[in-house]
Image (cartoon, rainbow, N blue to C red; front, side, top):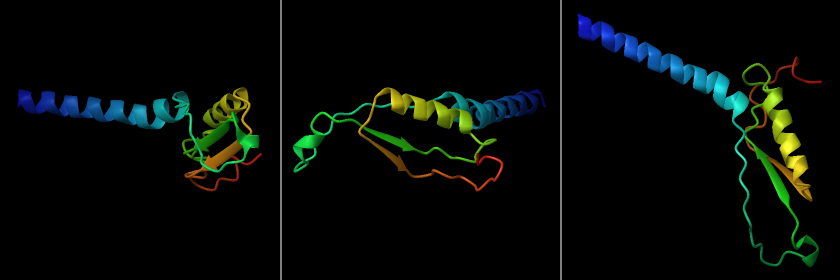
Length: 101
């Protein structure tokens, strides 16, 4: 019985920790910024040395709007002064009229 109780507590604590990570920490506090150099064949010389920002997986409408993380991502993109900003996949999680400003 003691092993069952210990195992149950362990499982509950693990699930709670995973839930906190998935619903609070990761979508609100972790902004993944990656910088890559890319060679694009046959691209005009006007693009030489230009920067492109790619914003992806923004999940607008997820986890209480998620607008704070989106603001951080946009601010970070503006900091690098890109010539082009691309928005890719998972932009809107769920239509939510309270998020639209």
